[in-house]
Every structure is written in structure tokens, then in C-alpha cells.
Amino acid sequence: MADDYLVRIGKLIRDARQHRGWTQSQLAEALGTSQSAVNRIERGNQNISLEMIARIGEALDSEIVSLGYAGPMHLRVVGGRRLSGAIDVKTSKNACVALLCASLLNQGRTVLRRVARIEEVFRILEVLNSVGVRTRWINDGVDLEIVPPAELELDAIDEEAARRTRSIIMFLGPLLHRMDRFKLPYAGGCDLGTRTVEPHMIALRRFGLEVTATEGIYHAEVERSSPDRPIVLTERGDTVTENALLAAARHDGVTVIRNASSNYMVQDLCFFLEALGVKVDGIGTTTLTVHGVPVIDTDVDYSPSEDPVEAMSLLAAAVVTESELTIRRVPIEFLEIELAVLEEMGLDQDRSAEYPADNGRTRLVDLTVRPSKLEAPIDKIHPMPFPGLNIDNVPFFAAIAAVAQGQTLIHDWVYDNRAIYLTDLNRLGGRLQLLDPHRVLVEGPTRWRASEMMCPPALRPAVVVLLAMMAAEGTSVLRNVYVINRGYEDLAERLNSVGAQIETFRDI
Ligand SMILES: CC(=O)N[C@H]1[C@@H](OP(=O)(O)OP(=O)(O)OC[C@H]2O[C@@H](n3ccc(=O)[nH]c3=O)[C@H](O)[C@@H]2O)O[C@H](CO)[C@@H](O)[C@@H]1O
Ligand SMILES: C=C(OP(=O)(O)O)C(=O)O
Image (cartoon, rainbow, N blue to C red):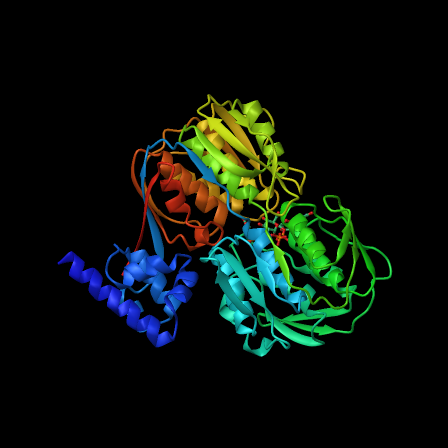
């Protein structure tokens, strides 16, 4: 009976695929699986989860979705389990989205290796596809090929996808070289309160871009000009630095950018620009000198580096579940301060010798953390632009502080409301006191308890809640985890591979 059911589903999938005119390999690429797995599914020889059916429905954009309307995804977490073994860090969301935007600079074919298959990347791909850029997953869904059209059709832009990501703002830099007048939807992303775009406008104005904003749309007009003196960024932000780099890359001349971020995604973008033939001096510092190339038409192959924030997340998973875990491929330069603080708190950890990431530039290590008796840090935890403690890593210190003995003050001066979301941990037994919208006092250690709750609408706090659920004895439910999938690829499955018990499910 059960087998018969699988055969019928397999046949429906095959029909839908053929209706779309796709080969098994094309469907496999879209799903990030192998042709042989698709073949098995179609013949009814493979158990298939509701999740996979929903993904196939989405990929084929077919009536087959009636098999399982893909409502929001939820997680059911059986907590209190120790993790063990080793887990690899994936490439970073923030570099991948910047590189996708940067591919608009290139008239040639761009191949990006091992791009994270995450919702944020999917949104940018939807936007790129809607304006005529051809993209496809190649090599069994691992790598991404991007081929731009001669002319972009910006009028056809997928506004819904664009509004779901902050990164759309990084279209401004490349587009100012391609058109004299264009419109873009407002940038979105996590609900982190007001996030300024003014520093972007100030920097890009120097290249002749003027933007007026009305009713959710940026109206851009370009009268190309040359920055005659260094561009001084008013904030040392990551995406603003990237936007200035993207504008400078095709500017015919030398552009100096001061107060530049030297964070990981900016460095990855600089390495990519170099692969495109754009010389960038000062990579890793706060002054970048860009030798622009007016026409970029090259077939380029680049491997973005691993995500330090994912590394921090996995490290925090090990700490809160009191596990011994090896986290492989950790970009150590971008986690050094975090590790120094954790060492002071008493974390037992050691690292392998360094080895290069596939981009040949970023230094990686394998990091092993062991169950430790942690003490609250003496000083507050607060972020700073790189080389400070990473702003996106601050939320993980809330979960770690909750398992340490004593009181930890966390001061997130950056975002209006990210610290507030951390108090969701109280529903799982945490003792976090909000002192004001930016400061939380965490009292540890915590006796976690299971709970059912909605995901906070911000990526890192959502993952922090998931980690606490993994530590809490019993079964917890985390509802509507789109925001986690925005930045992490198959997080539940990957944590399960090192001993977690997390099931994904949807309301049908
Ligand atoms: C796609 C991407 O790469 N996103 C990252 C990027 O977003 P992004 O670069 O877009 O960050 P924002 O520009 O929103 O900056 C974050 C906040 O910090 C403030 N600010 C920033 C720098 C500064 O020197 N002074 C200052 O006040 C901004 O006003 C804003 O309120 O950087 C953020 C901060 O590292 C990260 O959380 C995001 O994950
Ligand atoms: C805030 C984040 O990202 P974004 O800039 O994409 O909203 C994040 O990665 O935590």
C-alpha cells in the first residue's frame, strides 16, 4: 500500500516535470539533489518527505503543489540531546548576496562555487531572473552559473522578492553604470527597526547617482561623474562599502574609499573584483583604492568563503547543549575576538593548523569545543565594526551567557530591536532582563524548558531560540522559520547529522 502511494506520487512528479519540459537532471539541479535521486523518486523507489514534495512543487511551479500546499515551515525539536562529531561551515549569506549583485558588473559568465542554498540567495536570484539574468545551479546543484543579458529589463523586476531582502540595495552600484534612469523597490530584510540607506546615497552621489524615494520605490537618475577626492563613508557599514566598491569597479579611474568596512563579505567581494580584473589595494584595511575597469567582460570562476556567523552559530549550539563538537572550515580571522572572549569565560577549545579557503585567501581552521564550566564575562559584550566582535554574533552570546554562571550585560547598540527579541529566551526558562531597547542583562545558568513559540522576525535571534530548544529537555515547536532559512542552508538536517533531533513540518 505504502509503495503504491510512492509510485503514484512519483508518476505525478514525472508528469509535472515533463509538462515543464525539464529533464531529470534539470529538476535535480533545481532541488540541489542528484539525477539518480530524482529517478528513484519518480519510480516510487524512494521515501519522500512532505518537505521534499513541497520543494518539488515550488521548483516545478506546477499543479503538483496541490499534493501539499507549502505553507510556512515549522520545526519540532526534541531537546536535551548532546551533539557529537564534526560539521562543516557553509559559504556566507552576506558574501553570496554581494557577489550575486556584483555579477551584474560582468558581461561574461560568472560561476560561483558552493553558493549557500538559502532563501536570501533565492530571493536575489528571483530578482535577477525577473530582469533577464539567466542563472542555473550546476554540478549537482552545488555551484551557480550566472549569465547576464545584453540589456536588463528592470520594468519586469520581481518586486515581491526584492522587498524581502535588504541586499537589493546593492543593485544601485552596478546599475548606475548600465542605465541613466531606473527604479528599484525599497530594501527589506529582517525586522530590525529602521536601517538607514543614507550612507549609500551619500557615497553613490559621488558617482553621479541621485535617488528620490516615493511610495516604496527608489527613483534613480544618473549623470555620471568622477569622485575627485576620496569618498569618506559616513558609517563603516558592510553593504555601503560594497555598494561603493561596486560603483568604483566600473568607474574609469581610481577611487579611494575611506572608513571602509573590512569585514568578511567585503573582503570576499574585493577578491571577486580582483578575479574580474579590478585591482583593489588595501583589502582588509579601512582604506580601499579601486582601479576601475569601464568594461568587464570575462568568464570568471570564484569560490566565496565560509560564513563566520554560521561558525559562531554552530559553536553556540555545542556550548548550550554541553557537547563536544568539531566545527570545520571556520574563517578564523573573523571569529578571533569571539573566541578570545569565550576563552576568558572558560571555554575549552582547540584549533587545527590554518588552511586556505577555496578562494585561496581566507584562512580556515577546524575548531573543537568541549563541555566547559563557563563564567559570565567581567565586561559587557558589545559589537564593533570588524575587527571588533561581529554585530551578527552578539545574539549568540545571549544563549551562551544563559548557560554561564553569573550576570552578563549584552549591549547591542546597532539595531533598534534585536536585543528585545533575545528576551524570547525567557519563554524557554531563560532569565533575561531588558534594561532598555539596546541592553539585556542575562542571568545564568539556565534550566531550559521546552516550549512552543513563533520565530522572532529576525534571523539571529531566531537561531538563538532554536539553540535553546535544542538544550531544553522535551519537545519544543518553533513556528514559521522562513527567517532562519533566509540565512542557513538545511540547518535542521545538518544539526541532525551531529545528533540533534529536529523535524521540519508544515501545516497543510
Ligand atoms: C547583507 C549584509 O551584508 N548584511 C549585513 C550588513 O548589513 P548592512 O551593511 O546593510 O548594515 P546596516 O547598514 O543596516 O548597518 C547596521 C546598523 O548599524 C549602524 N551602523 C553601522 C556601521 C557604523 O559604522 N555605524 C552605525 O551606526 C547602521 O546605521 C545600522 O543601523 O551589516 C550588518 C552589520 O554588520 C549585518 O548585521 C548584516 O548581516
Ligand atoms: C541582519 C542580518 O542580515 P540582513 O542584512 O540580510 O538583514 C543578519 O545576517 O543577521
